[in-house]
Image (tube, rainbow, N blue to C red):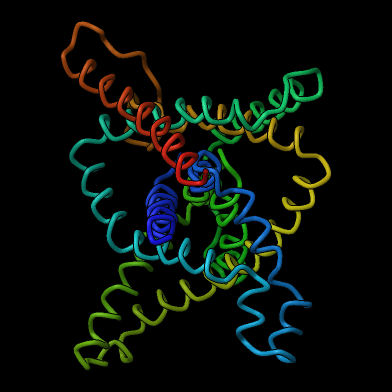
Length: 315
Protein backbone atom coordinates (compact mmCIF):
# COMPACT_ATOMS: atom_id res chain seq x y z
CA UNK A 1 0.00 0.00 0.00
CA UNK A 2 2.78 2.44 0.93
CA UNK A 3 4.60 1.59 -2.29
CA UNK A 4 1.48 2.55 -4.27
CA UNK A 5 1.26 5.91 -2.48
CA UNK A 6 4.97 6.56 -3.00
CA UNK A 7 4.63 5.74 -6.70
CA UNK A 8 1.71 8.16 -6.98
CA UNK A 9 3.79 10.85 -5.27
CA UNK A 10 6.65 10.24 -7.74
CA UNK A 11 4.22 10.58 -10.64
CA UNK A 12 3.06 13.89 -9.17
CA UNK A 13 6.70 15.01 -8.88
CA UNK A 14 7.25 14.17 -12.54
CA UNK A 15 4.07 15.99 -13.60
CA UNK A 16 5.01 19.14 -11.71
CA UNK A 17 8.60 19.13 -12.91
CA UNK A 18 7.89 18.76 -16.62
CA UNK A 19 4.89 21.10 -16.51
CA UNK A 20 7.31 23.96 -15.84
CA UNK A 21 9.26 23.21 -19.03
CA UNK A 22 7.98 24.82 -22.26
CA UNK A 23 7.14 22.12 -24.77
CA UNK A 24 6.51 19.35 -22.23
CA UNK A 25 3.08 18.55 -20.80
CA UNK A 26 2.33 17.32 -17.30
CA UNK A 27 -0.74 15.71 -18.85
CA UNK A 28 1.56 13.57 -21.01
CA UNK A 29 3.25 12.22 -17.86
CA UNK A 30 -0.17 11.46 -16.34
CA UNK A 31 -1.23 9.73 -19.54
CA UNK A 32 1.82 7.51 -19.96
CA UNK A 33 1.92 6.56 -16.26
CA UNK A 34 -1.68 5.39 -16.28
CA UNK A 35 -3.28 7.94 -13.93
CA UNK A 36 -4.79 10.29 -16.51
CA UNK A 37 -8.42 9.15 -16.35
CA UNK A 38 -8.28 8.85 -12.55
CA UNK A 39 -7.16 12.50 -12.30
CA UNK A 40 -9.82 13.73 -14.72
CA UNK A 41 -12.64 11.80 -13.08
CA UNK A 42 -11.56 12.74 -9.54
CA UNK A 43 -11.35 16.46 -10.31
CA UNK A 44 -14.70 16.25 -12.09
CA UNK A 45 -16.27 15.26 -8.75
CA UNK A 46 -15.38 18.67 -7.29
CA UNK A 47 -18.74 20.26 -8.10
CA UNK A 48 -21.94 21.58 -6.54
CA UNK A 49 -22.98 18.12 -5.38
CA UNK A 50 -19.67 17.44 -3.59
CA UNK A 51 -19.83 20.82 -1.82
CA UNK A 52 -23.39 19.99 -0.78
CA UNK A 53 -21.99 16.81 0.81
CA UNK A 54 -19.32 18.92 2.52
CA UNK A 55 -21.87 21.17 4.22
CA UNK A 56 -24.39 18.41 5.04
CA UNK A 57 -22.26 15.36 5.88
CA UNK A 58 -18.88 16.88 6.74
CA UNK A 59 -15.36 16.98 5.38
CA UNK A 60 -14.71 13.21 5.61
CA UNK A 61 -17.62 12.39 3.30
CA UNK A 62 -16.56 15.19 0.94
CA UNK A 63 -12.97 13.86 0.92
CA UNK A 64 -14.16 10.36 0.03
CA UNK A 65 -16.53 11.69 -2.65
CA UNK A 66 -13.79 13.48 -4.59
CA UNK A 67 -11.20 10.69 -4.16
CA UNK A 68 -9.32 13.09 -1.90
CA UNK A 69 -6.48 10.77 -0.88
CA UNK A 70 -5.53 10.21 -4.54
CA UNK A 71 -5.69 13.92 -5.41
CA UNK A 72 -3.80 14.92 -2.25
CA UNK A 73 -0.91 12.57 -2.99
CA UNK A 74 -0.68 13.54 -6.67
CA UNK A 75 -0.84 17.29 -6.10
CA UNK A 76 1.51 17.10 -3.12
CA UNK A 77 4.03 15.73 -5.59
CA UNK A 78 3.20 18.45 -8.12
CA UNK A 79 3.64 21.23 -5.54
CA UNK A 80 6.78 19.69 -4.02
CA UNK A 81 8.41 19.44 -7.45
CA UNK A 82 7.69 23.07 -8.16
CA UNK A 83 10.19 24.13 -5.49
CA UNK A 84 12.55 21.13 -5.55
CA UNK A 85 12.75 18.92 -8.63
CA UNK A 86 11.89 21.75 -11.01
CA UNK A 87 14.64 23.95 -9.50
CA UNK A 88 17.15 21.17 -10.17
CA UNK A 89 15.69 20.75 -13.64
CA UNK A 90 16.08 24.46 -14.34
CA UNK A 91 19.76 24.20 -13.37
CA UNK A 92 20.29 21.16 -15.57
CA UNK A 93 18.66 22.87 -18.53
CA UNK A 94 20.92 25.91 -18.11
CA UNK A 95 24.05 23.73 -18.19
CA UNK A 96 23.01 20.67 -20.24
CA UNK A 97 20.06 21.88 -22.32
CA UNK A 98 20.59 19.63 -25.35
CA UNK A 99 20.98 16.49 -23.23
CA UNK A 100 17.95 17.26 -21.07
CA UNK A 101 15.72 17.94 -24.06
CA UNK A 102 17.12 14.81 -25.70
CA UNK A 103 15.80 12.85 -22.72
CA UNK A 104 12.45 14.66 -22.89
CA UNK A 105 12.22 13.83 -26.60
CA UNK A 106 12.93 10.19 -25.82
CA UNK A 107 10.31 10.15 -23.07
CA UNK A 108 7.65 11.40 -25.47
CA UNK A 109 8.73 8.86 -28.10
CA UNK A 110 8.56 6.14 -25.47
CA UNK A 111 5.06 7.22 -24.56
CA UNK A 112 3.81 5.97 -27.92
CA UNK A 113 4.57 2.42 -26.79
CA UNK A 114 2.37 3.02 -23.78
CA UNK A 115 -0.35 4.74 -25.78
CA UNK A 116 -0.55 1.75 -28.12
CA UNK A 117 -2.21 -0.16 -25.27
CA UNK A 118 -4.69 2.68 -24.71
CA UNK A 119 -6.05 2.59 -28.27
CA UNK A 120 -8.50 -0.26 -28.75
CA UNK A 121 -7.92 -0.41 -32.50
CA UNK A 122 -6.78 1.71 -35.42
CA UNK A 123 -9.58 2.50 -37.85
CA UNK A 124 -10.71 5.43 -39.98
CA UNK A 125 -12.21 7.20 -36.96
CA UNK A 126 -9.16 6.90 -34.72
CA UNK A 127 -6.76 7.63 -37.58
CA UNK A 128 -8.70 10.83 -38.34
CA UNK A 129 -8.50 11.75 -34.65
CA UNK A 130 -4.72 11.27 -34.67
CA UNK A 131 -4.39 13.53 -37.74
CA UNK A 132 -6.59 16.22 -36.16
CA UNK A 133 -4.56 16.15 -32.94
CA UNK A 134 -1.29 16.19 -34.88
CA UNK A 135 -2.33 19.24 -36.92
CA UNK A 136 -3.43 21.15 -33.81
CA UNK A 137 -0.18 20.23 -32.03
CA UNK A 138 1.91 21.37 -35.02
CA UNK A 139 -0.11 24.59 -35.31
CA UNK A 140 0.67 25.43 -31.68
CA UNK A 141 4.35 24.45 -32.13
CA UNK A 142 4.76 26.82 -35.08
CA UNK A 143 2.77 29.67 -33.51
CA UNK A 144 4.53 33.01 -33.07
CA UNK A 145 4.63 34.76 -29.71
CA UNK A 146 1.36 36.50 -28.90
CA UNK A 147 2.36 39.39 -26.67
CA UNK A 148 -0.55 40.16 -24.36
CA UNK A 149 -0.89 42.72 -21.62
CA UNK A 150 -0.50 41.75 -17.99
CA UNK A 151 -3.88 43.06 -16.80
CA UNK A 152 -5.70 41.22 -14.01
CA UNK A 153 -8.14 39.65 -16.49
CA UNK A 154 -5.35 38.48 -18.81
CA UNK A 155 -3.42 36.93 -15.91
CA UNK A 156 -6.58 35.16 -14.71
CA UNK A 157 -7.28 33.69 -18.15
CA UNK A 158 -3.59 32.81 -18.49
CA UNK A 159 -4.16 30.49 -15.53
CA UNK A 160 -7.28 29.00 -17.14
CA UNK A 161 -5.37 28.36 -20.37
CA UNK A 162 -2.05 27.25 -18.88
CA UNK A 163 -3.61 24.61 -16.63
CA UNK A 164 -4.63 22.79 -19.80
CA UNK A 165 -1.04 21.56 -19.94
CA UNK A 166 -1.67 19.66 -16.72
CA UNK A 167 -4.64 17.74 -18.10
CA UNK A 168 -4.22 17.82 -21.89
CA UNK A 169 -1.38 15.51 -22.95
CA UNK A 170 0.79 17.07 -25.65
CA UNK A 171 -0.26 20.63 -24.85
CA UNK A 172 2.34 22.41 -22.72
CA UNK A 173 0.91 25.04 -20.38
CA UNK A 174 4.34 26.66 -20.02
CA UNK A 175 4.67 26.82 -23.80
CA UNK A 176 1.29 28.55 -24.05
CA UNK A 177 2.50 31.10 -21.49
CA UNK A 178 5.57 31.66 -23.66
CA UNK A 179 3.32 32.27 -26.66
CA UNK A 180 1.30 34.79 -24.65
CA UNK A 181 4.48 36.51 -23.41
CA UNK A 182 3.72 35.86 -19.72
CA UNK A 183 6.05 32.93 -18.96
CA UNK A 184 8.80 34.90 -17.18
CA UNK A 185 6.34 37.04 -15.21
CA UNK A 186 4.35 34.07 -13.91
CA UNK A 187 6.62 31.02 -13.87
CA UNK A 188 9.83 32.80 -12.83
CA UNK A 189 9.28 36.22 -11.22
CA UNK A 190 6.05 35.40 -9.35
CA UNK A 191 7.20 31.97 -8.21
CA UNK A 192 10.50 33.41 -6.97
CA UNK A 193 8.54 36.13 -5.14
CA UNK A 194 6.47 33.47 -3.38
CA UNK A 195 9.60 31.48 -2.48
CA UNK A 196 11.36 34.49 -0.94
CA UNK A 197 8.16 35.57 0.83
CA UNK A 198 7.72 32.15 2.46
CA UNK A 199 11.37 32.17 3.59
CA UNK A 200 10.92 35.64 5.11
CA UNK A 201 7.67 34.68 6.87
CA UNK A 202 9.38 31.65 8.41
CA UNK A 203 12.10 34.02 9.61
CA UNK A 204 9.42 36.39 11.02
CA UNK A 205 10.49 39.05 8.55
CA UNK A 206 7.48 40.94 7.17
CA UNK A 207 9.25 43.76 5.36
CA UNK A 208 7.86 42.51 2.05
CA UNK A 209 4.54 44.16 3.02
CA UNK A 210 6.17 47.50 2.17
CA UNK A 211 7.57 46.26 -1.16
CA UNK A 212 5.12 47.23 -3.96
CA UNK A 213 6.84 45.03 -6.56
CA UNK A 214 6.72 41.96 -4.29
CA UNK A 215 3.03 42.53 -3.51
CA UNK A 216 2.30 42.99 -7.23
CA UNK A 217 4.00 39.68 -8.08
CA UNK A 218 2.12 37.89 -5.29
CA UNK A 219 -1.15 39.32 -6.63
CA UNK A 220 -0.21 38.03 -10.09
CA UNK A 221 0.36 34.55 -8.64
CA UNK A 222 -2.98 34.59 -6.76
CA UNK A 223 -4.89 35.59 -9.91
CA UNK A 224 -3.05 32.96 -11.97
CA UNK A 225 -3.69 30.25 -9.37
CA UNK A 226 -7.39 31.12 -9.12
CA UNK A 227 -7.72 30.88 -12.90
CA UNK A 228 -5.81 27.58 -12.87
CA UNK A 229 -8.08 25.98 -10.26
CA UNK A 230 -11.26 27.01 -12.07
CA UNK A 231 -9.78 25.96 -15.42
CA UNK A 232 -8.77 22.60 -13.97
CA UNK A 233 -12.33 21.88 -12.83
CA UNK A 234 -13.85 23.18 -16.09
CA UNK A 235 -11.57 21.22 -18.45
CA UNK A 236 -11.77 18.08 -16.31
CA UNK A 237 -15.55 18.00 -16.64
CA UNK A 238 -15.33 18.35 -20.41
CA UNK A 239 -12.60 15.71 -20.77
CA UNK A 240 -14.33 13.28 -18.43
CA UNK A 241 -17.47 13.48 -20.55
CA UNK A 242 -15.48 13.01 -23.75
CA UNK A 243 -13.58 10.00 -22.37
CA UNK A 244 -16.84 8.45 -21.19
CA UNK A 245 -18.80 8.94 -24.42
CA UNK A 246 -16.10 9.15 -27.12
CA UNK A 247 -13.10 7.40 -25.58
CA UNK A 248 -11.40 6.06 -28.72
CA UNK A 249 -11.60 9.30 -30.72
CA UNK A 250 -10.55 11.38 -27.67
CA UNK A 251 -7.50 9.21 -26.99
CA UNK A 252 -6.58 9.24 -30.69
CA UNK A 253 -6.66 13.07 -30.71
CA UNK A 254 -4.47 13.05 -27.59
CA UNK A 255 -2.03 10.76 -29.42
CA UNK A 256 -1.86 13.28 -32.26
CA UNK A 257 -1.38 16.11 -29.75
CA UNK A 258 1.59 14.33 -28.22
CA UNK A 259 3.11 13.72 -31.65
CA UNK A 260 2.69 17.38 -32.53
CA UNK A 261 4.39 18.42 -29.30
CA UNK A 262 7.63 16.66 -30.28
CA UNK A 263 8.82 19.74 -32.17
CA UNK A 264 8.63 21.74 -28.95
CA UNK A 265 11.26 19.52 -27.32
CA UNK A 266 13.49 18.83 -30.36
CA UNK A 267 16.97 18.99 -28.76
CA UNK A 268 18.84 20.58 -31.63
CA UNK A 269 17.76 24.19 -32.09
CA UNK A 270 19.20 27.67 -32.50
CA UNK A 271 17.78 30.87 -31.01
CA UNK A 272 18.69 34.15 -32.73
CA UNK A 273 18.96 37.61 -31.18
CA UNK A 274 15.26 38.24 -31.81
CA UNK A 275 14.27 35.12 -29.89
CA UNK A 276 13.29 33.21 -33.04
CA UNK A 277 13.94 29.46 -32.83
CA UNK A 278 15.11 27.32 -35.75
CA UNK A 279 15.51 23.55 -35.68
CA UNK A 280 18.36 21.65 -37.34
CA UNK A 281 19.46 18.05 -37.80
CA UNK A 282 22.52 17.18 -35.70
CA UNK A 283 25.94 16.31 -37.09
CA UNK A 284 26.39 12.59 -36.49
CA UNK A 285 30.17 13.01 -36.68
CA UNK A 286 30.17 14.89 -33.36
CA UNK A 287 30.52 12.99 -30.10
CA UNK A 288 28.10 15.44 -28.42
CA UNK A 289 25.36 14.25 -30.81
CA UNK A 290 25.83 10.64 -29.72
CA UNK A 291 25.76 11.66 -26.07
CA UNK A 292 22.39 13.33 -26.66
CA UNK A 293 21.15 10.28 -28.57
CA UNK A 294 22.17 8.18 -25.57
CA UNK A 295 20.04 10.36 -23.28
CA UNK A 296 17.22 10.11 -25.82
CA UNK A 297 17.42 6.31 -25.55
CA UNK A 298 17.45 6.59 -21.74
CA UNK A 299 14.25 8.65 -21.97
CA UNK A 300 12.53 5.97 -24.05
CA UNK A 301 13.71 3.21 -21.72
CA UNK A 302 12.62 5.14 -18.61
CA UNK A 303 9.02 5.54 -19.82
CA UNK A 304 8.68 1.93 -20.97
CA UNK A 305 10.08 0.55 -17.72
CA UNK A 306 7.98 2.96 -15.62
CA UNK A 307 4.82 1.85 -17.41
CA UNK A 308 5.66 -1.84 -16.88
CA UNK A 309 6.53 -1.19 -13.22
CA UNK A 310 3.20 0.62 -12.70
CA UNK A 311 1.27 -2.23 -14.32
CA UNK A 312 3.00 -4.83 -12.14
CA UNK A 313 2.14 -2.91 -8.95
CA UNK A 314 -1.51 -2.56 -9.99
CA UNK A 315 -1.83 -6.36 -10.52
